[in-house]
Each structure stands twice: as C-alpha cells, then as structure tokens.
Image 1 (cartoon, rainbow, N blue to C red):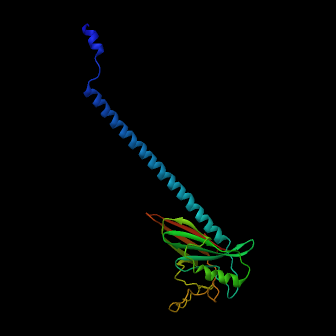
Image 2: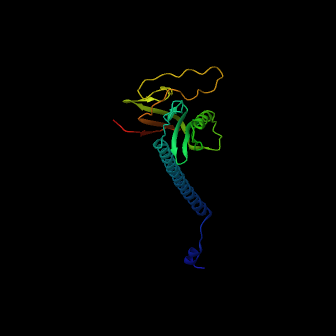
Image 3: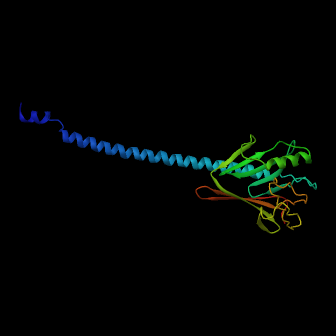
Length: 225
C-alpha cells in the first residue's frame, strides 16, 4: 500500500474520540441547563399570571358583595357591614332576599362564606351568630386566595379612613363611636349591636401577600359629598 493510501485509511485515535465525547457532554449539559432555566421561568410566569387572575377575581367578587350591600334599617337588625379583626361580615341583596357574606382570614388563607338568602330579621340574626362560629371547614366556605400573610380593613367615616376594628361595631351614622362591652369570661362572641350602625362611605381592603407585596382596594359606597 502506498503512503497516500495509508494516510486516507487512518481513523480517529482514542484520545480524539474521548475529547469529542467530552465536548459533546459539556454542550449537552449546557443545553439541558438552558432548557431547565426556560422551563422554570415559564412555570414562574404562568404561576404569576394565574395568581394575578385569581387575585383580580377575588377583588371583583369583594366589590360586587359591597355593591349589593343591604341595610335592614331595623333597630335589632344586624349591621350592614362590620369587621371584628379577622372577619368582615356584610349583608347583601339577592333576588330571593338578604344574604349574609363573611370574608375571613385564617391560616394564611382568605376565605369567603355565603349563607342562604333569608327573608326575616330573625333568620338574619341566626345567620349572623352562625357566622361567628365558622372554622373554615364549612361546605359553603371556599378558599378565595391562599398565600396571604395579613388582612386589614378600614372604613371611611366622615373625612378619613379609620381602622374598622377600632370603631367596634357601634360607629353610628352621626359619627360618634362607642366601644362595645367586653364579653364575659367563657361567653360567646357578642350579638349584633342594638344601636344602629351607619353604613360607611367606603371600605378599604389591604391584603399583605406572603413573600412580600401588598394589595389595596378601595370601594366607595353611597352618595359622596
């Protein structure tokens, strides 16, 4: 065999094959990391979009509940809206009567409970008392939003926002504020006040989300000055 023929028949050496395999392995690892990074970013973006849509839905439902607010205007009727530090209770109009709705914060979850439409003040009073015993496991109660660190509610009285809990449940329409009497030891939560509470001009909801971030939504109600 001539020298040129021997040169054409020469193949790769073992070292060359190993080097090529190493280069291919490095490139494959880099490509895999790139694909994983893209998948992670895509999942994170999808999660953020779904959470944003969920949050928008929750806030829309919250606004709709307040937009249908119902004030019974009877001396012993439950107040149209009240906040006790953990639960915002409100009465809303429905086609079949009045409905009690409770937005509550428990264990990092923002929950919504809606009772059956009722037609009498006695039934509304019973529903109000029942709503004070909710523990989050009721069939009518749904998880509106999870990953919530804190919930705060403010009412617009007169010309300023005030902590809804600090006014108790007896902030009357004229603007005066009375502190509710403390319950006796071992007693259940107090019944709705006999003094009629005026409907605030606005409700502010502040959600502090786990991992940082805060969402504030103001809902104005009734004629504004």
